[in-house]
Length: 106
Image: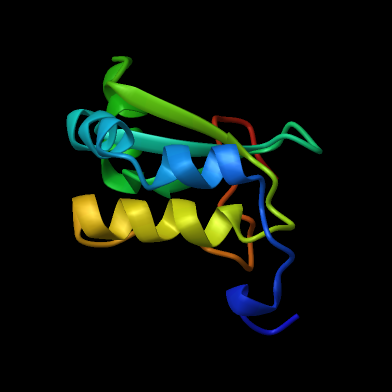
């Protein structure tokens, strides 16, 4: 699959949520946005890489929004689009799955 358009359709209730004004409001209040792949449990960065790094360095917790999706459907595309509309861009990196390093690392 080369584009998000090639992905299977996501769950209608998740798509409705990701396109709602309520979700947009939650996004605007969050400095950090994480996605959670419901199939694997993996968390990945969608927005707020600099804030995440700064918060880690200072040992502070930031307002964070976690959104559970199925990454192998177009739910990922809807999440990225919603973040881009509200925040101006997303920071998801598909080659790494957007995974965060929380210390230790390789």
